[in-house]
Length: 114
Length: 115
Image (cartoon, rainbow over all chains, first blue to last red):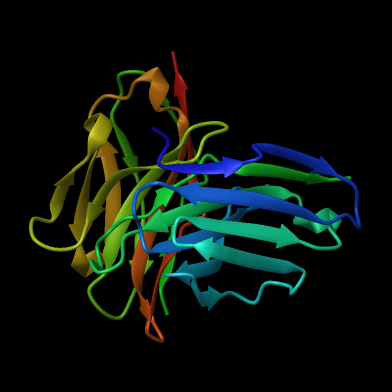
């Protein structure tokens, strides 16, 4: 069973379009994250939700809007896509409560904006 | 503020040779340190973590790491590298900033293994 899954795995789209990436975890975790990995492999946190509540928003443009319909899902919607949005986006989840609890990552979604 | 430095962007070793990947961190309190591996086209997989106790931590795939508080380091080691170890390796520090727990990742070290 896949612990953290993301769809789609690849997404190619034109500038100006709106797109969504979905994430689901079946680990029963309370906290979920979105990360952006750029072409140099640098990983930067974008958002974090805990029990459907936004707790981290790292100065991401407001074209990016996360949505958490329930604890197991955290989707990322991106409006008016720009060339600079091309990257790999990773979803992760973590069980809250233990400060040493690690994050579990999904396989990533490679977004290419043309 | 938390920060993580991985000084080596690329490392090349021969199969069977030993490996050490460097990681230095900055964090005001007790750090919670992690090493992840990312194989090409894959997500990140946890290799090992340190949060307290024995400063030498054993992980999966034969990796270990040693926490040295005096040097603010958490270097990853493996005595004999296999070709399948070629991947990107990330060190991360977890901690609470302004009441919110989050990871800060290093910039990664790409490992190439020569046959």
